[in-house]
Length: 220
Image (cartoon, rainbow, N blue to C red):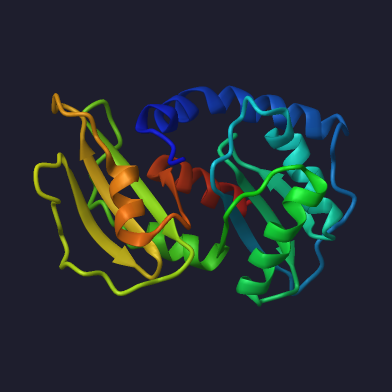
């Protein structure tokens, strides 16, 4: 099931507190990785689809533990929507996605489409400034939908679907950027539209979350 916009907004409002709590736990050694990255390691974020923070199997400490068991280094999480940062010497992204997807049901008891982006890819997306200085606010919701496969779009950008109050600004690699007008009385169905257009192997984050992920990736 696609996450709702209300859920994404709720995650952004509440997860700053959750992140501070998780950081305190990690610093106290509750689930601190003992695997230290070495020179030459590559930094990635695994974006997991359909993560529900209320599900005990999907809590950040469990996600970190599962990734550490896969012998990834410097494992961290960003808020509670399924964003797991890690380091590895592998550059085979498709194989890494398969490795995580196969391990999740065995180790954590659930399945999830996994989409991996490198630190370089996230940095390039943010540097592109895809929203042209528009801010995430009560009037506008800025989103990035990450695609597992990168099909050729059937429309030109910018694209406003008929009778919808959102605009698809562009697709950069496999990342689709969109803006929703929250002042409309209509109920946005962006997630459903994205799945119809690009398939169900996608996952969406607010641009604020993407920027948080990048800040954490860039931490020493």
